[in-house]
Image 1 (tube, rainbow, N blue to C red):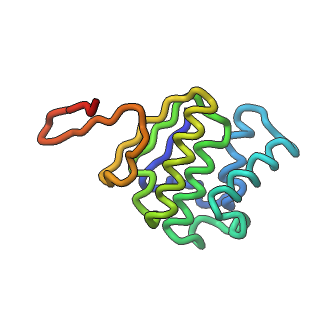
Image 2: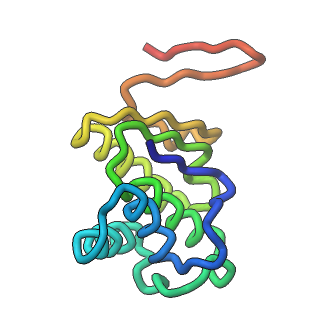
Length: 139
């Protein structure tokens, strides 16, 4: 399971690279395989040039991109994302949502996203709207 938090929740004493490497080490993926996966994700998220920075030295959008890379590191079967694009510009936000859809399709994973930005929901299989305490499903 991968979590993408709105508030990043990066480990403050680990670099961006180490934050993404951490979940891989928890499931026993180490060495060059782990490093290659980290490089791939950081490059895709356009943050590889800041891989050796601690979270406090990254801008909010950069921290969010590291958090997303970390959540995707071990190819989770379920991804829960709370406002994953809140601190990103529209272009990067759309790339993140495209990545989530791509991963869901390729890995046959489920992706559950909570967002207030309706521009980010195009192309998802199901969309639910919560308004005034009522849940409505788009068909």
